[in-house]
Length: 176
Image 1: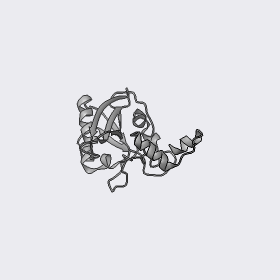
Image 2: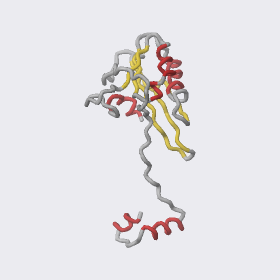
Image 3: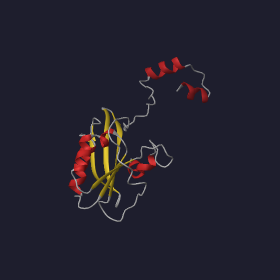
Image 4: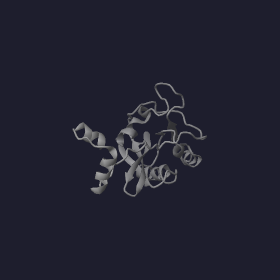
C-alpha cells in the first residue's frame, strides 16, 4: 500500500501506512504461496500415458479425465475433485473434501462417476501422477473393473509430457 501511495504522489513510510490502515480496520491481504495439489513425489507405480493428448473421442465412456484443485474459503481450504467424460465434456463425478486423502477425493468422485455412467466397454481413466491417483487403494479399485485402463502423465521429462506440464491433462485443468 505504501508503494502505491508513493506512486500516486503521497510521501508516506511503510510503518505509517500500516498504522493508518490498522486504525481504519484495514489489513493487507498477503499473496499466498502457490498451493500444490499434486504430490508426485511418491513410490507408487505410474501408469503409462495412454491418452497422449487425444482430447476427443467417438463415444461416451471411452475416456474420463480427472483432476483436483483447491478452493480457499473463510474457514480454510477445500479440495474439489472432478471426473469429466471427454465425449461430452460433462462432469460425471465430483467430490468436495477438507483433506487430500484418496478416500475423500478421487475414490469418492470415482464412485459417483460410475454411478452416473456405468462402465460397459474399454475406458481410459487419465489423471496426473498425484499420490491419490497412484495409491494402491485407488489402483485396486480401477483394476476391479475389467474394462478400465489407467493413464497418467509420462514420467519422462520430454517436452511433450514432462512433469508439471498442464497440457497432458488440459481438459480437466481448463475446467477449473
